[in-house]
Image (cartoon, rainbow, N blue to C red; front, side, top):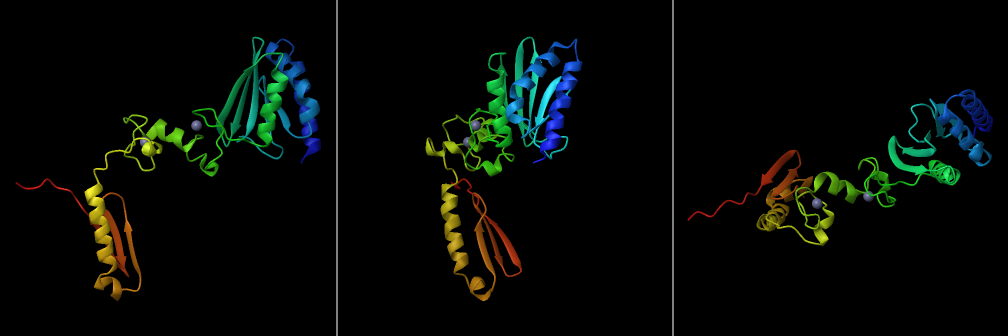
Length: 229
Ligand SMILES: [Zn+2]
Ligand SMILES: [Zn+2]
Protein backbone atom coordinates (compact mmCIF):
# COMPACT_ATOMS: atom_id res chain seq x y z
CA UNK A 1 0.00 0.00 0.00
CA UNK A 2 1.32 3.42 -0.99
CA UNK A 3 0.55 5.17 2.27
CA UNK A 4 2.55 8.35 1.69
CA UNK A 5 1.01 8.94 -1.74
CA UNK A 6 -2.49 8.55 -0.34
CA UNK A 7 -1.74 10.99 2.47
CA UNK A 8 -0.49 13.60 0.03
CA UNK A 9 -3.48 13.13 -2.20
CA UNK A 10 -5.93 13.77 0.62
CA UNK A 11 -4.20 16.96 1.73
CA UNK A 12 -3.81 18.42 -1.73
CA UNK A 13 -7.38 17.46 -2.62
CA UNK A 14 -8.61 19.17 0.53
CA UNK A 15 -6.52 22.27 -0.24
CA UNK A 16 -7.79 22.27 -3.81
CA UNK A 17 -11.40 22.25 -2.62
CA UNK A 18 -10.80 24.94 -0.02
CA UNK A 19 -9.31 27.18 -2.71
CA UNK A 20 -12.56 27.06 -4.66
CA UNK A 21 -14.12 29.70 -2.42
CA UNK A 22 -17.12 30.68 -4.47
CA UNK A 23 -18.17 27.13 -5.31
CA UNK A 24 -20.69 25.66 -2.82
CA UNK A 25 -20.25 22.14 -4.23
CA UNK A 26 -16.52 22.30 -3.55
CA UNK A 27 -17.04 23.56 -0.01
CA UNK A 28 -19.55 20.80 0.68
CA UNK A 29 -17.09 18.21 -0.62
CA UNK A 30 -14.32 19.67 1.55
CA UNK A 31 -16.51 18.96 4.59
CA UNK A 32 -17.30 15.46 3.35
CA UNK A 33 -13.62 14.76 2.81
CA UNK A 34 -12.84 15.80 6.39
CA UNK A 35 -15.57 13.52 7.73
CA UNK A 36 -14.16 10.33 6.21
CA UNK A 37 -10.48 11.26 6.22
CA UNK A 38 -9.58 9.68 9.54
CA UNK A 39 -10.64 6.24 8.50
CA UNK A 40 -9.74 6.22 4.82
CA UNK A 41 -6.71 8.42 4.11
CA UNK A 42 -4.26 5.55 4.51
CA UNK A 43 -6.32 3.15 2.46
CA UNK A 44 -7.57 5.02 -0.59
CA UNK A 45 -6.54 7.83 -2.89
CA UNK A 46 -8.76 10.91 -2.84
CA UNK A 47 -8.63 13.29 -5.74
CA UNK A 48 -10.56 16.05 -7.42
CA UNK A 49 -12.51 15.60 -10.59
CA UNK A 50 -13.70 19.12 -11.32
CA UNK A 51 -15.72 19.80 -8.15
CA UNK A 52 -16.41 16.15 -7.45
CA UNK A 53 -14.53 13.90 -5.06
CA UNK A 54 -13.07 10.83 -6.67
CA UNK A 55 -11.88 7.94 -4.50
CA UNK A 56 -9.70 5.31 -6.15
CA UNK A 57 -7.58 2.34 -5.18
CA UNK A 58 -3.87 2.96 -4.58
CA UNK A 59 -1.70 2.01 -7.53
CA UNK A 60 -4.46 2.34 -10.12
CA UNK A 61 -4.32 4.78 -13.02
CA UNK A 62 -6.85 6.72 -15.05
CA UNK A 63 -9.25 5.75 -16.48
CA UNK A 64 -10.18 4.12 -13.20
CA UNK A 65 -12.16 0.92 -13.56
CA UNK A 66 -13.16 1.05 -9.90
CA UNK A 67 -13.95 4.29 -8.14
CA UNK A 68 -16.40 6.15 -5.95
CA UNK A 69 -17.50 9.59 -7.07
CA UNK A 70 -19.20 12.11 -4.79
CA UNK A 71 -21.07 15.00 -6.33
CA UNK A 72 -22.57 17.74 -4.18
CA UNK A 73 -25.44 19.97 -5.28
CA UNK A 74 -28.13 21.93 -3.44
CA UNK A 75 -27.43 20.40 -0.03
CA UNK A 76 -27.55 16.81 -1.36
CA UNK A 77 -24.79 14.38 -2.20
CA UNK A 78 -24.87 11.87 -5.02
CA UNK A 79 -22.64 8.84 -4.63
CA UNK A 80 -21.68 6.73 -7.61
CA UNK A 81 -19.66 3.54 -7.45
CA UNK A 82 -18.02 2.05 -10.51
CA UNK A 83 -16.68 -1.48 -10.71
CA UNK A 84 -14.95 -2.96 -13.75
CA UNK A 85 -15.93 0.16 -15.66
CA UNK A 86 -19.63 -0.20 -14.94
CA UNK A 87 -21.83 1.97 -12.75
CA UNK A 88 -22.91 -0.55 -10.12
CA UNK A 89 -24.33 1.62 -7.36
CA UNK A 90 -25.91 5.04 -7.03
CA UNK A 91 -27.32 6.66 -3.92
CA UNK A 92 -28.32 10.06 -2.69
CA UNK A 93 -27.45 11.27 0.80
CA UNK A 94 -28.14 14.36 2.90
CA UNK A 95 -25.70 16.26 5.10
CA UNK A 96 -26.65 14.15 8.11
CA UNK A 97 -25.95 10.76 6.53
CA UNK A 98 -23.28 11.47 3.89
CA UNK A 99 -20.48 10.19 6.15
CA UNK A 100 -22.24 6.88 6.85
CA UNK A 101 -23.29 6.35 3.24
CA UNK A 102 -19.87 7.23 1.88
CA UNK A 103 -18.23 4.96 4.42
CA UNK A 104 -20.29 2.04 3.11
CA UNK A 105 -19.48 2.92 -0.51
CA UNK A 106 -15.75 3.10 0.22
CA UNK A 107 -15.88 -0.24 2.03
CA UNK A 108 -17.37 -1.79 -1.07
CA UNK A 109 -14.79 -0.04 -3.27
CA UNK A 110 -11.97 -1.92 -1.54
CA UNK A 111 -13.89 -5.18 -1.34
CA UNK A 112 -16.35 -4.97 -4.17
CA UNK A 113 -19.67 -6.70 -3.89
CA UNK A 114 -21.20 -7.16 -7.28
CA UNK A 115 -24.53 -5.44 -7.46
CA UNK A 116 -26.88 -6.22 -10.33
CA UNK A 117 -27.63 -3.17 -12.46
CA UNK A 118 -31.15 -4.35 -13.19
CA UNK A 119 -32.51 -5.45 -9.80
CA UNK A 120 -30.02 -3.79 -7.42
CA UNK A 121 -29.38 -7.01 -5.50
CA UNK A 122 -26.05 -8.72 -4.93
CA UNK A 123 -24.68 -11.08 -7.53
CA UNK A 124 -23.14 -14.05 -5.74
CA UNK A 125 -23.62 -16.91 -8.20
CA UNK A 126 -21.71 -16.92 -11.51
CA UNK A 127 -20.01 -13.70 -10.43
CA UNK A 128 -17.09 -14.55 -12.72
CA UNK A 129 -19.46 -13.82 -15.59
CA UNK A 130 -20.60 -10.47 -14.22
CA UNK A 131 -19.07 -8.57 -17.13
CA UNK A 132 -20.37 -11.00 -19.74
CA UNK A 133 -23.90 -10.34 -18.52
CA UNK A 134 -23.30 -6.57 -18.57
CA UNK A 135 -23.23 -6.19 -14.79
CA UNK A 136 -26.36 -8.21 -14.11
CA UNK A 137 -27.57 -11.54 -12.82
CA UNK A 138 -27.83 -14.09 -15.59
CA UNK A 139 -31.60 -14.15 -15.05
CA UNK A 140 -31.87 -10.36 -15.13
CA UNK A 141 -29.83 -10.27 -18.33
CA UNK A 142 -31.98 -12.98 -19.85
CA UNK A 143 -35.26 -11.20 -19.12
CA UNK A 144 -33.81 -7.86 -20.21
CA UNK A 145 -32.46 -8.96 -23.56
CA UNK A 146 -33.32 -12.51 -24.54
CA UNK A 147 -36.78 -13.48 -23.33
CA UNK A 148 -39.20 -11.25 -25.26
CA UNK A 149 -41.90 -11.64 -26.49
CA UNK A 150 -42.69 -14.59 -24.20
CA UNK A 151 -44.59 -14.31 -20.94
CA UNK A 152 -42.08 -13.92 -18.11
CA UNK A 153 -43.27 -17.23 -16.57
CA UNK A 154 -43.14 -19.15 -19.82
CA UNK A 155 -40.04 -20.85 -21.17
CA UNK A 156 -38.77 -19.02 -24.23
CA UNK A 157 -36.81 -20.49 -27.11
CA UNK A 158 -33.40 -19.19 -26.02
CA UNK A 159 -31.34 -21.89 -24.33
CA UNK A 160 -31.14 -21.85 -20.53
CA UNK A 161 -34.37 -19.93 -19.93
CA UNK A 162 -34.95 -19.59 -16.15
CA UNK A 163 -38.72 -19.98 -16.68
CA UNK A 164 -38.34 -23.56 -17.89
CA UNK A 165 -39.09 -24.80 -14.37
CA UNK A 166 -42.36 -22.88 -14.16
CA UNK A 167 -44.03 -23.29 -17.54
CA UNK A 168 -42.03 -25.40 -19.98
CA UNK A 169 -42.38 -24.22 -23.56
CA UNK A 170 -43.95 -26.22 -26.32
CA UNK A 171 -41.21 -28.58 -27.36
CA UNK A 172 -41.93 -28.67 -31.03
CA UNK A 173 -38.55 -30.34 -31.48
CA UNK A 174 -39.44 -33.49 -29.56
CA UNK A 175 -40.03 -35.90 -32.48
CA UNK A 176 -36.81 -34.65 -33.99
CA UNK A 177 -35.00 -35.03 -30.68
CA UNK A 178 -35.83 -38.73 -30.45
CA UNK A 179 -34.73 -39.21 -34.05
CA UNK A 180 -31.50 -37.46 -33.23
CA UNK A 181 -30.97 -39.80 -30.26
CA UNK A 182 -31.47 -42.82 -32.54
CA UNK A 183 -29.16 -41.33 -35.10
CA UNK A 184 -26.41 -40.84 -32.52
CA UNK A 185 -26.77 -44.46 -31.33
CA UNK A 186 -26.62 -45.73 -34.92
CA UNK A 187 -23.58 -43.65 -35.71
CA UNK A 188 -21.82 -44.84 -32.57
CA UNK A 189 -22.38 -48.47 -33.49
CA UNK A 190 -21.67 -48.02 -37.19
CA UNK A 191 -18.94 -49.73 -39.15
CA UNK A 192 -17.47 -46.30 -39.89
CA UNK A 193 -17.19 -45.69 -36.18
CA UNK A 194 -15.40 -48.98 -35.45
CA UNK A 195 -12.98 -48.42 -38.35
CA UNK A 196 -12.01 -44.92 -37.15
CA UNK A 197 -9.60 -44.10 -34.37
CA UNK A 198 -10.98 -40.63 -33.56
CA UNK A 199 -14.75 -40.50 -33.26
CA UNK A 200 -16.76 -37.54 -32.06
CA UNK A 201 -20.52 -37.38 -32.26
CA UNK A 202 -22.39 -34.47 -30.72
CA UNK A 203 -25.88 -33.09 -30.66
CA UNK A 204 -25.75 -29.52 -31.94
CA UNK A 205 -29.14 -28.10 -31.12
CA UNK A 206 -32.59 -29.14 -32.30
CA UNK A 207 -32.43 -31.80 -34.99
CA UNK A 208 -28.75 -31.40 -35.62
CA UNK A 209 -25.82 -33.76 -35.15
CA UNK A 210 -22.16 -33.10 -35.78
CA UNK A 211 -20.05 -36.19 -36.32
CA UNK A 212 -16.41 -36.62 -37.11
CA UNK A 213 -14.66 -39.87 -37.99
CA UNK A 214 -10.95 -39.22 -38.15
CA UNK A 215 -10.51 -36.47 -40.75
CA UNK A 216 -14.09 -36.67 -42.07
CA UNK A 217 -16.65 -34.26 -40.65
CA UNK A 218 -20.39 -34.54 -41.13
CA UNK A 219 -23.26 -32.34 -40.14
CA UNK A 220 -26.64 -34.05 -40.16
CA UNK A 221 -29.93 -32.23 -39.84
CA UNK A 222 -33.33 -33.76 -39.21
CA UNK A 223 -36.30 -31.76 -40.46
CA UNK A 224 -39.93 -32.33 -39.69
CA UNK A 225 -42.06 -32.01 -42.83
CA UNK A 226 -45.82 -32.16 -43.13
CA UNK A 227 -47.06 -35.66 -43.85
CA UNK A 228 -48.09 -36.21 -47.49
CA UNK A 229 -51.75 -37.06 -47.93
ZN1 LIG B 1 -30.46 -8.90 -10.93
ZN1 LIG C 1 -36.54 -17.03 -21.43
